[in-house]
Amino acid sequence: MSDTEIQALITLIDDPDEGIYVQVRERIISLGGPVVPVLEHAWEAQGQGDLFRNRVEDLLHTIHLDITYNRLITWRQGGAEDLLEGAMAVCRYRYAELDEQRVRARLSALRQDIWLELNDNLTAFEKVRVFNHIFYQVHGFKGNKRNYHAPQNSYINEVLESRKGNPLSLALIYQLLAEELELPLRGVNLPNHFVLAYMDETGVAASEFGHAGVLFYVNAFSQGDILGRSEIDEFLSKLDLPADDSFYQPCTNLDIIRRLLNNLLNSYEKLNDPDRVEDLKYLLSAL
Image 1 (tube, rainbow, N blue to C red):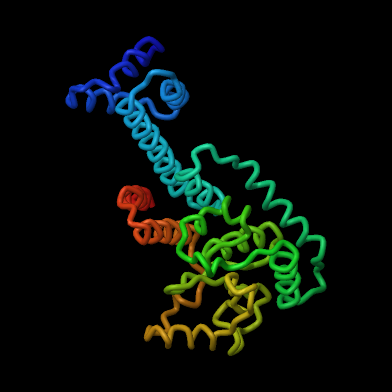
Image 2 (tube, helix red, strand yellow):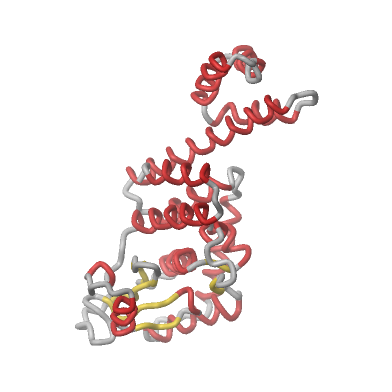
């Protein structure tokens, strides 16, 4: 579509005829990302009324939502192998202008600080203690207990800046760093909680402390506390839930990002924001 045709559509955004606007809206949304700068420029122009600006804001939101939806579909269809890509796609829902390089640089700096203190002679427990010291004591990451259900706890760019998150977001960042450090930590999708499993890569039979293929568990929300199978058993018992294998074994990256979106959906429900809730349901349908 030519620039002239796009400008013609822009002039019709505040048309009082709802039927005309519906058609204009569909055409503009179909143009996708390339039309965003044009809409932003039009919104900033002087002399525009409230109707025009409100409709432009709606158009921009819808286009950004569709971009996020399509990015999640592409990620899933590609095998959902890159956990960071999935998490940043979720961030893009709220932060359309997200500086992804800043997120990667922040993670890289954390990884470097932990790597400098690790060595191959350390046991699995010792490696986790070193990781925890740098992550929690030196850099100050902690669970956001005061605002546990706040949406910002589910956007990793926010968590990296504030250093406060929920069980899932802290574990997600912990896992991303562990992957870069070649530490075999994987997320475990517990009901009402989320922990990490330190996988047994040595072939040693699991003791009572761990589970089949797992040496032990790490609670990223609680300063990286190390847990055994018995603590998971006790947690499930308090919830009156059976000891299903899925509560002890690693989940997939797809499971993690689904959980991340569900957490956001629940956060916006608690804030009584039905529009955001519908957005999150739409994004979940991509996975």
